[in-house]
Image 1: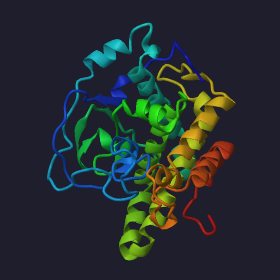
Image 2: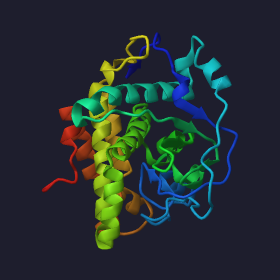
Image 3: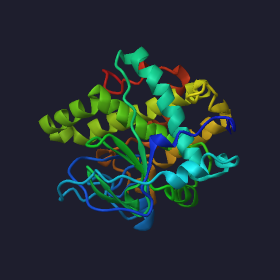
Image 4: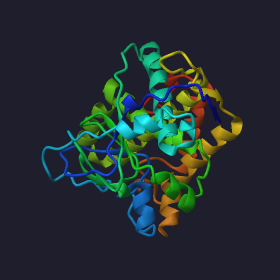
Length: 304
């Protein structure tokens, strides 16, 4: 993977709340991995957390989700010549690429306009409309405020504890969460929640379908990422290699529900899956990448 050093990092697509935090509101967060606390929570809890559940958010409080960060230092850092050496600037540029893709792909594939969403950088804890979150939640999307949240320290834990060391694991994680934003815009997430209420016994299976579709959307972005550009028309990626795609697939496999259950020392139980097995996550990311078409990501279709 090679980023274009001439591409402009648009930090307006990020809300930098590092060093701040607070309470929260009501909603259901959608994280990258399974477990009560997501991948990071499982690592911190020495891999003993149960798969499925409340994702570590405190949804018992009201209000919240309106806190704003200060992007001044981030904007200055990401305007410097060596900006792409900085983790936060690279991640902001990944967000730029993902949203540039969906601005074109969503109308073409689904006939709906894409509405941009910010990614919130936070450290340790943060206020969201889905509740008070801490780093143990891992990266997640909150449908109640249409924002993606990530503590960038997640990547170190992802590499050190789960062995997903490749750089391309980072844009894959973000692309997965923006896949949830697309589902929110299309009404897929809300429809799935209604189905869960009508058929509680299928709640986990429906959750798996939602997560695998987000993986597939991430694959579709990856296929088209080298065609994305900044607001001046400069390409964001100059190259994405087979090794990069292998890194994304490796990450998807390592955060499969079965892999997480095995790491927690528990027997693999598909009935408890909420995000899909390692093989399923690999399969659907690969399908999105192979076709490059988000319309191919119908995990809810008959026979899918």
